[in-house]
Length: 229
Image (tube, rainbow, N blue to C red; front, side, top):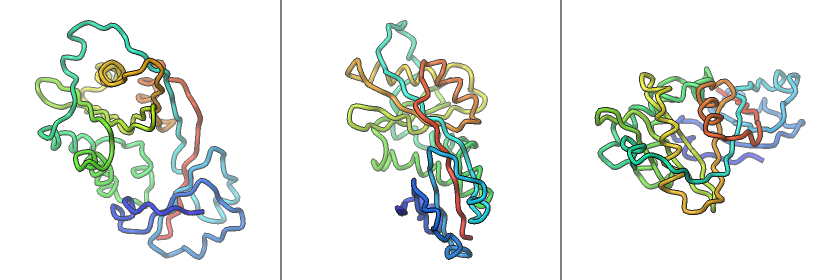
């Protein structure tokens, strides 16, 4: 029923497990006072009585979007500040990652210290440079400084936007849209390709970005945490 997440266990310094199914008779009390985090991802809301009894908390509500992608005819200079990342960008990208994603479950869970939440996202992106996660990494620039990035996974013929972040002072200036357009025009080789992306239901800026770029909601789910410690 539970699947261990070894990478996240290492980041948090405790045993981390993921599950999509909860047996109503399962006894969570046996994990009390142990260094453990159990993440439950469900497409249905779990009853409050069960949550209260087992000290499980709703951490976030997620929306997963998809888009049938196609290339567009754009002006020649449209992508002049958008490109693939290189090793020289690493420090700037990791800094952006560390100070973004405040809506993620790691920041919303009060039992996870903020420095650990920042560390998780930093090391998440670092895995790209270690060739352990991600197919492509796109960056946006302003005055020769990296101000945003887009990390992309590939699954068969589909693409998944794993992480997207833009520095606070450069948000709502079109960098997010341009990076998505770069993905569609410079990477995708087929006309009929789906792009997926998930975000938190209270992350209004991200939702606005995806709707603007013609993404549609595929499904919703709920993320719960049980912290033994």
